[in-house]
Length: 232
Image (cartoon, rainbow, N blue to C red; front, side, top):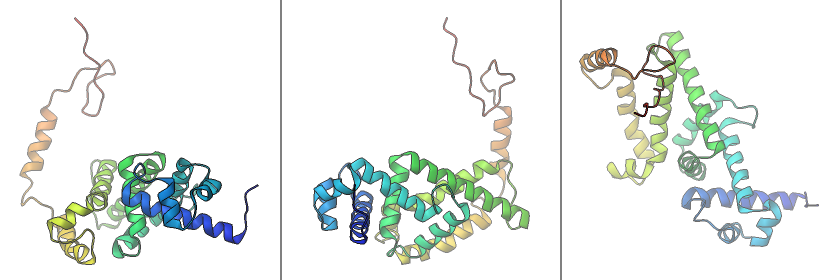
């Protein structure tokens, strides 16, 4: 049986935290068990003793980071996710390892990364609906799609952090970069980009005139999968 002493638990946590930092910074494939062990001040054999394999270590890291954002697994809290993300972005130096790891989760694609993204979309949709009800946010003909767009745009700051910072002369999401982003972002969401609604009207008319592929599911619609072409 594996030890469950306080020292053993501390060692396990130290290894996990080292793995989160390395996986987030260098990627899972580029990080070896030996590298994690060296970072944690342990041996590779001790890493395997605690986790069994590199993949099992990665799963525990995933679950830990998701729990930090969402709360305990099985009790995902959409409001908690939004608050956590805001706190992390307000203090990037303190939460650097979690931010890097979260970005990797979203980019590399795994079940927990998908679960996290879905929960962020759900939380955003709820937040926007609350704003519509309160009269502080405009209503939308497609609330789900709007929530997806807002979520993905928000995550761009994590995924493209290096390029975002480089474009304004900063080294990533520094406090100065976040401060500079604040007003332009709020201005864009508050007043929009276009000076009039000509583009919106043109796009709506074009979509209404479009001829969608025929389907045996009934009258074709823009969000309906078309049938495959019939071979001659």
